[in-house]
Amino acid sequence: MGNCLASEAAAILIQRPDGTIERFYFSLSAQEVMNSNIGHYVALVVTTSNGGPLKHLKLLRPSEALQIGHVYRLITFEDVLKEFNAKKCAKLGKLLKENEGFDRRPKQKSGDDDNALEVST
Picture 1 (spheres, rainbow, N blue to C red):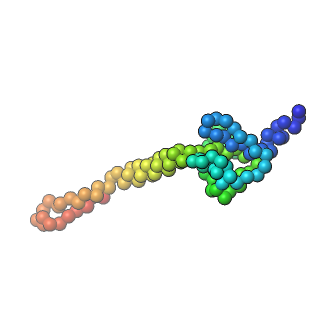
Picture 2: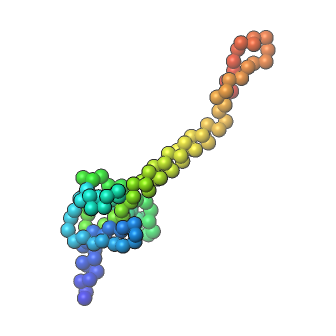
Picture 3: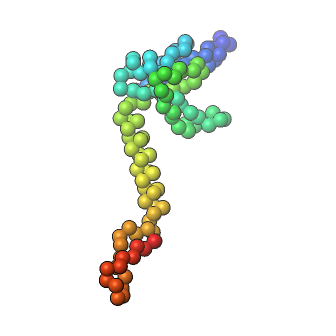
């Protein structure tokens, strides 16, 4: 009975989207998991150094090996696309906010020269 926790630590845990958990007691690649779960990617669950709550997920390449003792999650293709689009929109919003004071429209000078243009910065 004292070895129950030791055997759990020596396993690869994969969380499925439906909430079930698969345990593997041997090394396997991310490609093998993706082949058996079409339309899903494998992501490593990264936690804080003190084992705190979920910090973020790291997508694995198909050639990467899953390490015993780590927790992985299956992520759908749609979730990956949503995350990439959200990051892209956040970057675009940040750039627009930084350049908020910059007016790209040329303004005409009031004065003698009607053909001269001025760009405000």
